[in-house]
Length: 297
Ligand code: NAD
Image (cartoon, rainbow, N blue to C red):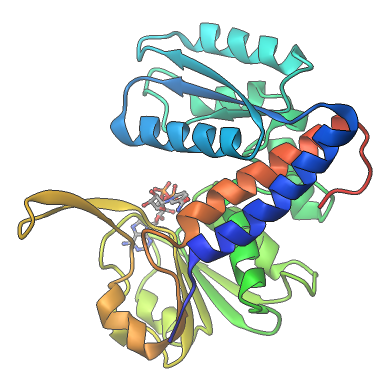
C-alpha cells in the first residue's frame, strides 16, 4: 500500500506557487490578494480560515480578513461582497462555509463575482467546468486532481465510484473525472449517495473510490476490491475515550482498509492540505488574469 501523502504533495505544489509569486513580485512588485469572510465563531471554521490566511502570508499572498457575528443579515453580507467584487486589489473571495441558517448560502454564492470565485462554487464556474470551458474548479476537486497527478495516478479507463453528491465535492468531481480529458478524465464514473441501495455492490467493482459523506468508518475492507485506490475526503471530529480528547478521522476505516488497497489517502494529511492548494492556485490564476501575465500554471 502506498500512502497518498497530501503533505508531501502540498510541499511540492506550494513551492511552485511561491516560485511564480516571487517572480511576479520581482517584476512588477505586486502579489495576489485573497479575501476571507467568516460569519460566526464556529471553532473549526475559524481554524480553517486562520490556516488559509497564515499559508497565504507565508508564500507572499496578501490577505484581507472580514469577520461578522452570527446575527449579520444576508443583505449586509451581500453588500459587503458586492464592494469586494469591485475592489481591484482583491483577486479571490472565500466565504467560509457553513453559514448560519438565517442566510441563504446560494444567494451568497450568486453574489460573488465569478472572476473572483476562487472556491469555484458560482454556477458560472460550475457550468463552464461542465462544458469543459476554462474556469475555476472547486478547491477540493482540484486538490484531488493534483494529488492524483503528484502520485502519477491516471484515472483514464478506470471505474471510479464517488460516494456523496455534494455541490462542492461529489458532483463536480463526477463531471471532471468523466470528462473527455486524458489528463484527469475519461474514467467511467458511478455517483452513489444516501438513496443508493446496496452501495457495496458498486464499491466492490471500483478501481477508485472517492468518499465524501461525513460518516466515520463508513468504508470497510469488505466493501472494496483488492488493490483499489482510496481517496478519503471526510473530516469527522470524534471523541477518543482512551486519550480523553477529540481527534479528526475520515470516512474510511483506515486500519481495516489500508492493506487491501493499493493507494490510500490519510485523514488528516491527505485531501485537506490539497484543498488549500486548489484555492491558492485559483487565486494566483485570478491575479495573473488581472495583470495579464500570460499563461497560468
Ligand atoms: P455533504 O455533507 O453536503 O453531504 C453528504 C453527502 O453524503 C450527501 O451527498 C449524501 O447523499 C451522502 N451520504 C450521506 N449519507 C450517506 C450514506 N449512508 N450512504 C451514501 N451516501 C451518503 O457533503 P460534503 O460537503 O461533500 O462533505 C462530506 C465530508 O467531506 C464531510 O466530512 C466534510 O467535512 C468533508 N469535506 C472535506 C473537505 C476537505 O478539504 N478535506 C472539503 C469538503 C468537505
